[in-house]
Amino acid sequence: MRIAVCLTDNKPAPWVEGLQRLLPRATVAAWEPGAPPADHAVVWAPPQAFLDAQPQLRGLFNIGAGVDALLKLRLPPDALVVRLDDAGMSVQMAEFVCHAVIRHFRELDAYGQDSAQGRWGFRRPRSRSDFPVGVMGLGVLGQRVARSLGAFEFPVRGWSRTRRELPGMECFAGAEQFDAFLAGTRVLVNLLPLTPETENILDRETLGRLLPGGYLVNVARGAHLVEEDLLALLDAGHLAGAALDVFRTEPLPSDHPFWRHPKITVTPHTSARTLRDESVAQIARKIEALERGESIAGVVDRVRGY
Ligand code: NAP
Ligand code: GLV
View (cartoon, helix red, strand yellow):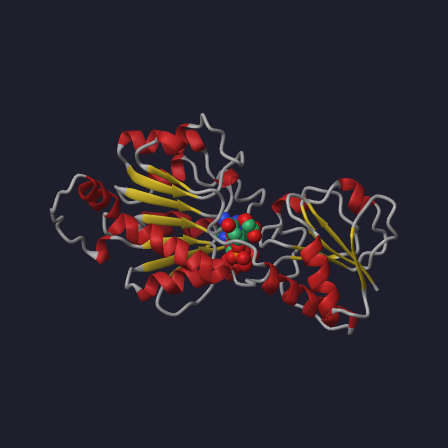
């Protein structure tokens, strides 16, 4: 069995070594043009030439949770496309989002400014019940985030494509319940996959339906957000702020207005990083399972787009 590793912006050697250690009977190699076709591939943003050279691929393993970029390429028709299934990401996402929500709720930026000026001053405690948090996307990451926010006793609401029943939160589903979901939400957390249905979903209409003084945490994909609509709603005062981890253009250009906006916090697509050891172990287990003819979790539905 041949396994090819083809990673853009990532050194392949540690992935090759890790997979080879766990799958000693396989031949694992970093892909180069002219290499023999592989049975399984481990990829991030592979060139089209790599995919075109893989007529017999059985498993195409993406080393991230989101497959939006991969699905834009011409893929071997019979290969299963497999996303990372948590692999240490959900705890990172939970800590990142809880931090962003709590930082806003507890006015920690304002306390930071006081501290910088040597000022000892209190703000009136806010009521958690005034800060319902709505989580868009109740998949692997969204559910973990929603549960973690619930542990801090924020009222949590969730929205997904198909109906979910999750303890401790009010669940909404589908386009028909989107407005009701938004209308009771003050802090909106985006954990949707990027698909044709969800692109530009964070626009003036959506964000304008949040409770006044709304706050946006976008940790999914930059193309979910219509940037000028966010800026307009912040400047109009309908939104209080935004924590943005993902952008239409990454790295975010140095002259982009988000960098200097006083109500926007920018982080460089770092909310849930791919952890190599966990990912290698998960992919190796799944390759073994596929070779035994078993089904695996994390297979992407190419038509649905996630
Ligand atoms: P997932 O397990 O595939 O879950 C996706 C969720 O979104 C599901 O609940 C799904 O509904 C819902 N959904 C999809 N399309 C929808 C629609 N049109 N309307 C309403 N709900 C819809 O994905 P995940 O692992 O949680 O990851 C989510 C995204 O996070 C990834 O796709 C990626 O873009 C992003 N991400 C970002 C980072 C980062 O560092 N910033 C790291 C990892 C991932 P159903 O439950 O009904 O299927
Ligand atoms: C990162 O953004 C991922 O999709 O894993």
